[in-house]
Length: 435
Image (tube, rainbow, N blue to C red; front, side):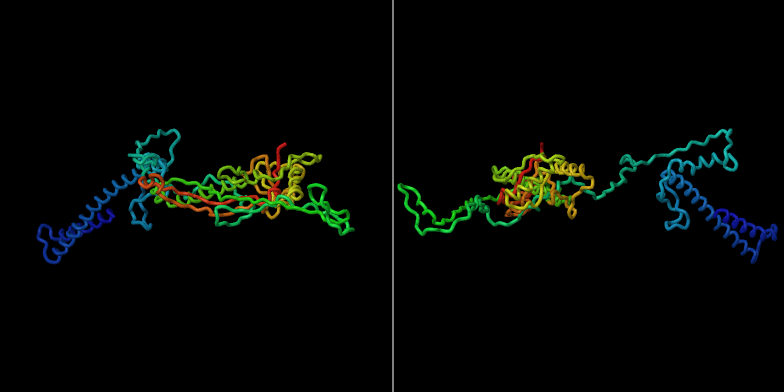
């Protein structure tokens, strides 16, 4: 732009001088005077523009130097941003790139024709420096502008799969206790009897005692049954967690996480109680500690057959013969179920007994539970174990605990109430899986 202005300035001065030369030392008059005046004014206007252009170019040169030091670049013509404006590079420049674009490098390369440096030439450029290296290592540099990438991912520690509640019977109660009746004995005196040959009645004994039936009287054997009434008290499974009101308000998802964790912990304790409750205090009497259940010892009597396969099959048979029930499944600790599977695969590598994506053993579904002690298994008719729900798991929060009110703390309580009982203990067989 400045070259064009200079040419225009020369043109205007030359036009004014050519007119004045016609008059020599005399005065310029008439139209020529007006023309000279016009050319000189045009020259002055162009000179002002020229001087401003020089100042602008100088300012731009200084800005270029500043922008370069900051690692910025000037927007090329034709882009959406205002041409000439500085912006952050679309791809951050390396120090090497900044060097080859510097005046020091360009001055160095101007010494060599065609941009090729002879291998024997001595090469030395002017020092190239950065006034400051901006990094993200500290807040004092660019670190204050580096934002943490919040992924929103929450990875919990995980919970063991819960399976036992799905096996047993579930009923409801509105009382604090439930009662049920177990049959202890049943009639077992049935026999074939002869036809009566006399109508005589029984006679009194010679002394004290029962009446004596008449011979040939065709009497039928008498049977008997006994029962017991069992009372199961509703127990409370509970747990609470303290939290600050500010924490719950600032992290809204926290309350949901606490609620879920509390419910899961209650469910794990319920599963432990169903299997292992010892009946003391407020504990359930779990299946493994219920009087009257059957037991199957570790058995290795069949040559060539893994004892685990033999023992578990015998237990299934005991449910039928001793408990007068039909087994509905097995429960194993995951470690024991692995041993059983390996024993089957050792005999038949293609043996992966599965029914509808559910693993099976001897035709029965298998459930893995970490609540089952390792080395012990259980099979039976799980309909004969009953949970009576009084209050299903609920979550409440209060600041009425201790001095929580004045400390802006809340207690979040998880609680459920239920009773548990085994209506027919003999329908279950505890299996010893250890030699």
